[in-house]
Figure 1 (tube, rainbow, N blue to C red):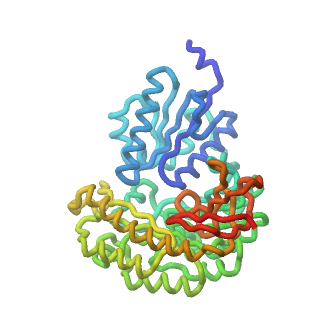
Figure 2: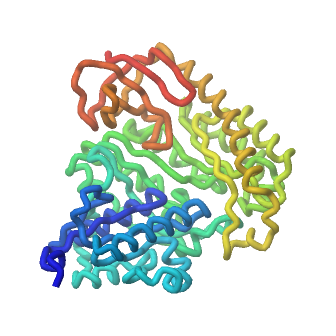
Figure 3: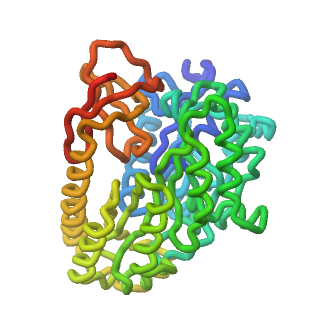
Length: 435
């Protein structure tokens, strides 16, 4: 018998994809710990004997990364470095049958909603009383809070409903209880995530309840920032803006993916909104909450997209001047209604168009940053890197948005709030001095 098998199991969880996957991994970690099983997130120490790969199956690049990661772990197992390799998450949910045949070295495959079955592999029991108990994989001062699972939208390019099912809201009481536990553990900032935030409550309460949830969360003592991610523009609940204005700990920030600006593309994508309606919505949001930061994402290379459509998207950005923008290239996904269309734009051209869009946004971002020079902001310190501190304003989310560089000899702690005067502006970042 190998010596390794005499040791207590230690599990390393590798998470790929979005923040929603990260939360799933954190919940799995909490359950394993409660069953007296050692667990770590993406450990580089190589002292674990079991790996769980939590995969992403959203677009081609994510699928490729997931498969390569699985193969790497299977190779380690074949070399005797691991005892078991388990795979869960979106890719496993969507392609389990094919993957089982192609990668027989994996010990077991699980879908997105099969946490109890994963635990059975460890002779562990799912503990319902642990609702909200997680081992954070993020720094201790911020965390993601998943308020719903799945999606009822039928966007033609998106495979998420195939992997995550229909929209299921979590009760307000359980979300508040989880947020309170997070804050008591040291979390200062909570980012609300779901496939679509603005649908929250319709299934559970028969009406949209995001504003009510925000009120409840805003009342938690010690919760400094609440941030909204992934709002859908169609039938946007304007009442959440009233709550945003009422409570200072709700960041003046909304992440609202719009995907395109040309009406023919929006129709083909089944987005249920027109360019004029999007412009009217953005204008109304800014009028209601002056100074709000709006982040959006766009897609280039959807089937049938013309150069004129790309020009319209650029004109849309120049007119609306979003604070933050991300661009994805279209991925032709099986099972989606867009898969029936011809994927007629080469990958290189999709990338070229994406770069063209980002060049427009880069100029807008620099101009907006230059306007901030001389202004004073309250920022949260994230980390120290290369002798300088990296922080964020309330207008910036983790990893995807701008950072504020602070050069100081004073010792700052992650999660600490400080006041900074902006002294320099770059394309996507700012530099400032402590006040």
